[in-house]
Image (cartoon, rainbow, N blue to C red; front, side, top):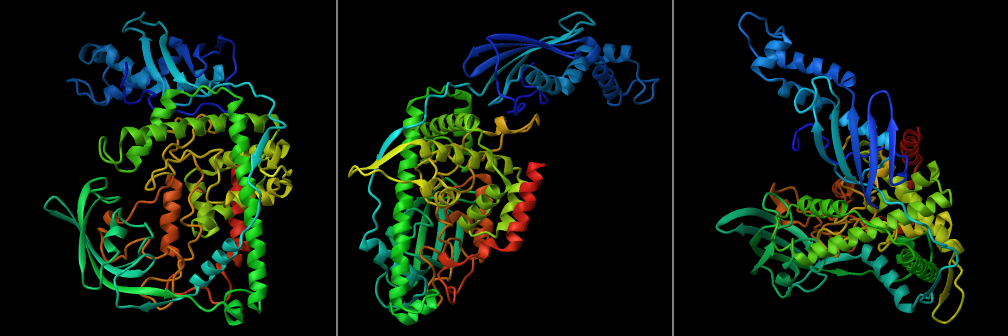
Length: 610
């Protein structure tokens, strides 16, 4: 009976117990009898038999339901006898109704009996229904084939050898840090010349698909080269002077026409360039807690050195993971990968065959999905072997760190995660991070000069926090596509089924914690391009102003998980505008770690623990 609306045809997470059994096992209870047979390392077949005695209450209820749906002369509605229902409607319809109502419960019980953890939607076939294709009071029989979480043999992961680049910050790194700080406090000055890279411009956009105008937005602020709006925009703007226009072809990234080719006309309203303040003592006092520029430079030098060490640790961590994965053969269920691929493309609003949905891009997403799945299975196994747990403090710190990356208040971010049911997923990610840190702790790391690298600081909780906030972090559980418009959720890893309980809910599309991209990390959006205060780098024109309801068609959709998309959307709305911080550089503020923020995060963590 495939295709019934109430059959378990969606991914239904099973019990949290791992899948362990011989090639064939049988478990019995007073309700159902289940036989499990391994078809492959990632697929199992369940044969389930439900006694008529257990089905009968549902059958009686089905008769009542049908009796309320039909009219029979001489009988009040709901009082039609079963024999007349069999004559007029057919017993087969009533039995199917009863089976539809109970099939998922029987399926879930079979999963629990056989300790099976499904990873994708099951394929169900009903082989015998009482009174239809079996005895009148015979058992209900059905079989289920479903992909499962594979068991792997964990190799000796202690003493892995990797080589990394030496950790050294150059003078260029120190100067770059100083220039980035100066840019936060720069001012915008109108200029009468063609627009160039990094200039701030005011523009008007009109998008048409065929002969239909689908979007129009005026007085948008944008930084040339930011890449935060439509593809082709930067090339069209460079060289334009105030009052001039250009036309370019692009693919819309949002709105009702997302994924469609469009012709966009951009009119340049004005050009401003950013003037940086002098790097002197006055600037040091304005931008930091230091009194002199020498003190500020010394601090930036120290931070650049710390950043180099963190970068070295990340390189070591990624290479250690690569070496670990080479030692383990992890079978990957095709259905899990295929489902994530389709989820990736459907969530981005693209149609099959458009410029975004290409064979090359699909192959890339598939490769990322398989890699993420293998990483997850292996690191979960390491976490089990090392008895890694996640305490409330670690969860709080992760939530606070991640919320900062999206420019969100930690209170709001924690509440959003809780409401979306994403906290268990976050805990799984933190646990895998700790497992990978443990493998790195055991590793033998040297640099290209032959020196032994001490990563003690990196693998401590503080080191993990630092790594967690890095732009390029987490090959351990990422499934990112290289496509700049939609990388983060291209192939989310499949850990929901293993962490969820028996709820017959669809697997959450977000396997990744919303901590993958760096766009929001720098989001101290201190100003619009029309302001006299210079905004932070790449902050301008992240979103079109609320002047037009159609603005989504001309602004790139953020590339995040479901939770992350909401996080960035809310973060942008609340981003400060117009003015840079008055005293300290944003990197030195600690607003996200206020007592109120921690209180909300603690409440969320405590609720999850309970």
